[in-house]
Amino acid sequence: MEQLGDIVIEKTINYRNPIELKEQPEYDIVLNENQRKVSEAIKETMDFKKKDKVNVHLIHGITGSGKTEVYMDLIDYTIKKGKSVIVLIPEIALTYQTVMRFTRRFKEKVSIINSRLSSGERYDQFERAKNGDITIMIGPRSALFTPFSNLGLIVIDEEHESAYKSESVPKYHAIEVAQKRAYDTGATVVLGSATPSLESYYKAKNGTYILHKLTTREKGNLPSVSIVDLREELQQGNKSIFSNKLQTLINDRLEKKEQTMLFINRRGFAGFVSCRDCGKAIKCPHCDVTLKLHNNKKLVCHYCGYTTKLPTKCPECGSTYLGGFGIGTQKIEMLIKQLCPTARVLRMDADTTSTKGSHDEILSAFANHQADILVGTQMIVKGHDFPDVTLVGVLAADMSLYASDYTAAEKTFQLLCQAAGRAGRGKNPGEVVIQTYAPDNYSIIAASHQDYDEFFEQEIVYRKLMGYPPVANMVSVLLQCSGESELEMATESVVQLIRKVKEQKYNELFVIGPADPPVSKINDIYRKIIYLKSDNRVHLIRLKDYLEYVINSSQNFKNINVQFDFKA
Image (cartoon, rainbow, N blue to C red; front, side, top):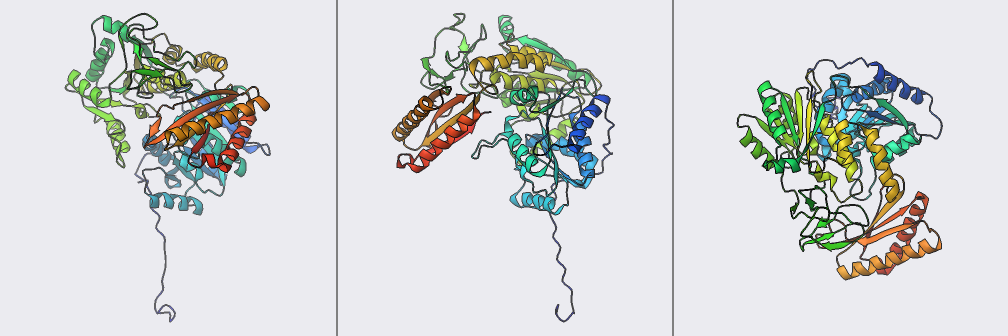
């Protein structure tokens, strides 16, 4: 019938759009003087790009300084030149407010991609990008692979976040991949954070990146921050998770009809032991990271393998009051309801956000004043803007401080600054209460001042002394096998290979381990880890290539899985 001309067949493809465009007021904000200076400086490098060089800009802006407005101005400039933009955000939890802002400004030009979309929905977004139906893609690190043919700008917001590093093979970092895509396409890379990673700030200091600063808040002032010493609370007879000061302020906010966020810092949660009298955690004498408590009552370092018995007294002050934390968001939700029976409480953690759309539901409910108090883990303190939140309580600052990781102080500082940044973003002043057993720790003191440079200057000295990134280069070699004895033999063989190369070629190479990683057995697969440090990154890369060649060509390693992970 078609051939006879009786009918005409038309085919149309209807791509799914995960964004529901609503009638919203325009979002066309005029930049203030500081924002305009940063934006113009970046545009200038976009217009006069050097050949074979990627321009990487780091915007270090305090919380609430308007980094998003600068991003939008740069995006508007890029798409007016006929090019496309990728905007990376670290977590799905940030999608709600980010997309609301961007769709108000750029309407149907925006799309999103994340793991909550079905495979078909993700496919549709990449097809829309390839066809030119959209020019802005927002999402976590997977959005980097959006097939734009005319990429002009890559923005990485909250660039310090560990979510930008893939935990599965290949263990790529979004910032490195962004620079490679920018090099191939002639695009510009813009990183932004109130608390940049030490690696990025170190590169900005030595001129590898171009540094820009935003030092004033767009609206309101930085909140006032109080540090509460939980040791003193115990001495006064208060055994509650809420200090007396925090309880008073929560009730005050309820009376004023203002909102409160309670943040429990669960990063690095498992296993460290600290003294409740002096606040000191028990650390490895060789690696300066906390020892982890195992079921056999032994404390183990997961860097070098150092092992010791759990002491009965604190090595610092002799107190017998040793212990770990054991409280979660559900417990806090229950306790806050007991403390404030009339308060409307929302909880946001891995359990309450496991279903599609649950992030948006919780955040929009809180934004619409359907709750007075939001209790949550780190996902509630990153990038959200709630003008009526005037109080933030950090319930356990020590948890991340004592993680068994050389970056523990950095992560703690970042989390506390991000948490503090949620308060006082509207017309009313904000207050922050940081509860801790270590009120004298430099990362907590610097976070209370919201002073990144103060923290950086102290932390970089520690990294230099210990030879940790970004001052030195480090790679971990993870070996896995179902047979424990076979793994032991293979690990010893790899160590011998490394020592041989060290003696013959790379004297400066420093070898730590082998040791058990924090989780030494998963699904009946045993694991061992070796750390290699060197001032020369090329030496580590060559050593990695040599080890891979030997392992892949030897029958002795046929049952061994080996993974290399560069730390900086």
